[in-house]
Image (cartoon, rainbow, N blue to C red; front, side, top):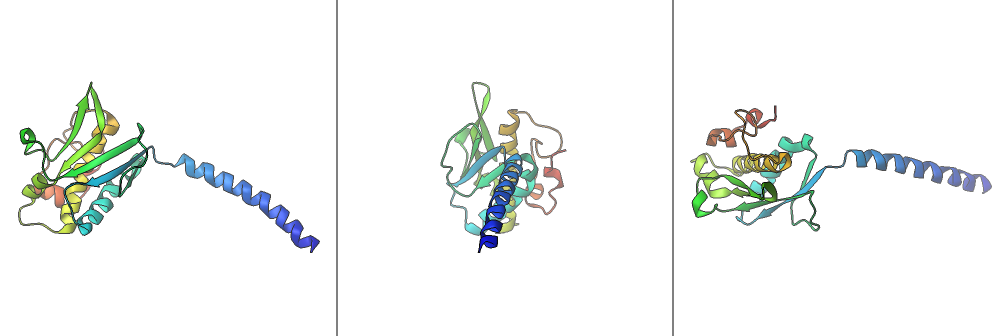
Length: 177
């Protein structure tokens, strides 16, 4: 009986040390930004699932962790992506928007579903629509993270994409370079 309790006493401190080590390692890899998608456009579940997969693939190395529901806490490290049916009347052709306020890009970003669908023509499926929405969302999130409203001539931060690029199988044009 004494031998068993002695092993228990040796095991507990070792387990505590391992837990501390693993905890600090996990904390070092903790995402820098946390955010949530809000589905105000009534996008169906298969499309949302496709969107989450594509979005995670595009921003996995950017310390961004997104959730599928409302964010509980507000802070400067929380990003909100709102899926809306359409943009304002003055921006009907815009696919998304990262609003500026006092020279700062705000953490409430919008993706406009109807203009994205308009670029897709008859090539619509849940997988392709989700992929296109994710690519627009990733572009807007990068505006916020970089705090730069500008565009590049290449990669994810290009100013415009064709419908085929938005829903196509090749994600290379959306990779950061």
